[in-house]
Length: 419
Length: 130
Image (tube, rainbow over all chains, first blue to last red; front, side, top):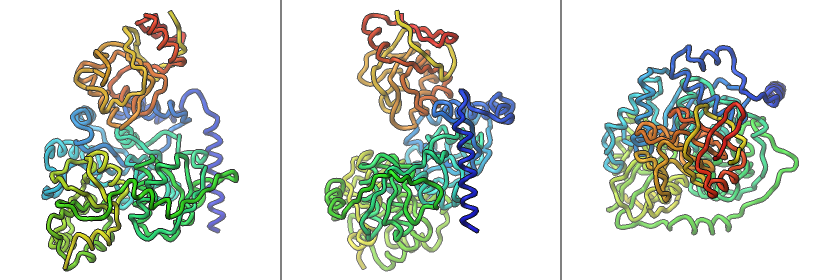
């Protein structure tokens, strides 16, 4: 019965795609879409439609499609600066409203305004940006894990920014989204649509490579593998040997590969919903062994040790409630050693953390809400940063020029805390 | 004088002095939004026809293009070999015409021979370098 339904969905998708191959010179718009473009629903809608149509035309799209969830990236004042703020202010003057469920990426300040590690500079500017986005209808999510707030389903149509979330949507949930830039996601939210091209087409979801990977023990190893595959493989690759991975491992793996290699879809054999990607007969096969990974580890990571001043960073991508709970249990009754800062970042929606928050803070851990060190400035100058995230390693060593060591959460907690 | 096959991506007038940067540039980081200068290149493209191979880098680039307009230092029009979404979005929100041409190498050659003006004739689908 289920199989039957799947076959029907697939043939329906193929039919749709056949229509898409009959490419006209111009992108096809429905009557309503034409009225949106022509300004009947206000200037903001018209500009949003123009953005989608023009980008769609450049990428060979035949039409637009409605999406069920937009995730806006590029909202941190530290990143977009005055130019971004100026544009958002102009956009807001037309008072547009988002047409679909919309979430936003982390901003550059801790929303609890209590962090001593994430700098509070620019918080007034960030507040203006947040207010504009929320006035247009965005959820006050401020997270890179929108899938924790609304779980996408297989074949779900999305327009998401934020590379790590895009990789999760396509590869774990089997949803369809391209990796969009900030302004385009805002346009998609206003129009409730995106262009039908790239990963929205089954023909673009073809696996070119199958990689057999060794069995991994923890999320730091999954991170490392992600960084390695991101760097070494540029085409869509399917992973075999991932079916035993935990949710945290999958999250870290995909975030890392999206950071080092712009991967938006990496099908995981036994995990990614079948039918959301195509494997061809002619596919190339290869394997990665542990030695290769160990060699790569020595190249990209510092060894796990304490500096005079050490910053531990956990929560890239943002921690889910259950991941946060595990951390709380791990740290129960322990205290941080001297010279150790411990930063955890969580979604903006977890502002009231109650008991968990209390027990972690007692151990000396700082929880920053709705932000992360990649999109903000940091007040401490550690000799070494320790993290279990490959994405954090990739960006913190490049953007902030930190020495970064990659290790599992268990190993890090053992090293930096004591009874 | 040479004529290149041209396709307007964002329609509008495109006629003026050429400002050639023969590479792909990242508007975020490589372009000063207050002056209209490209890092490592002399002068500003303010009010000129900016010809570049294409763009690369962060999506913040779209906002930088908008900021150029706001500071009054935007190019009159941008000519590219390859029009990428970040630039297209930037040009739409900043209302800067964007033209895609075939044979960018010819443009570079003509420029080095002293042809320093560009003019778009949209009805013929041609960009004249003279």
